[in-house]
Length: 290
Image (cartoon, rainbow, N blue to C red; front, side, top):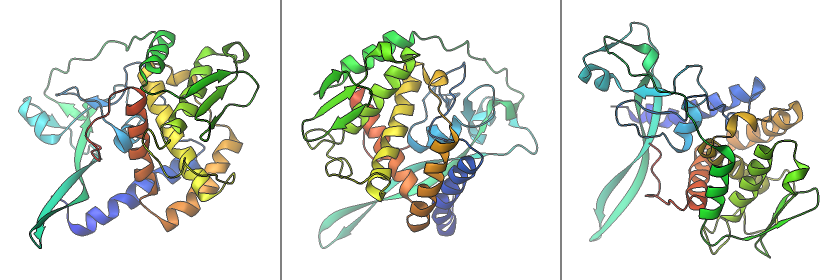
């Protein structure tokens, strides 16, 4: 069980990981989902979500399969000596009675997992390559989105207009890769989930100056949600953009934001998961990230 001080350090651990990757020229929310699909638990097959998806999909393992020390033991195996665990975070709810009212307070906890490469004594069943039709799956995600905004095509600047509740993207033929077209459309649809008739996200429902704090927060939510949707559609490997200018933008702004609020990235990941779930028409129980 983690101590109070360890719980307080979780945000710092996550932020340090994010900033380290940015400093090394990689945007960690644009993970390179490998040939074997998104990170998931080896035993229960559950896909990791939110910040956990960003953490585990960015590690240098061939197979994105993880399990706990206890799960390895229950399978009759053990963790190799010297193996390093990875923290997976989740939310617990503390309930207490105050003036005859039940109050609920969510707080962050974590447990440790190991990649299957760290396990010995178990006949691991390796997955086959993750096969998906990226175009068909992307179209399906878009068609399944409930209460969609107006989607228009044309011009050379994609955007979402929250006053008109309208997304505009260039025609597919204007993109070198159709995958980039879908990634762009996902990004603008992610912005649209913030409209007050959908998820009512504050950073979406008011004007923001380019590069301002609210602009960065909203862009980060849309970027991470796009990452989730591209992974779902099987097109993430061909939609990675790690240009030096792009990275510098986020290094400068996130460094300042995270120094003032060490929960910012975790919060953005949670909002992005909600946005992606809304677009996929699969809203789940709020606040959980395991």
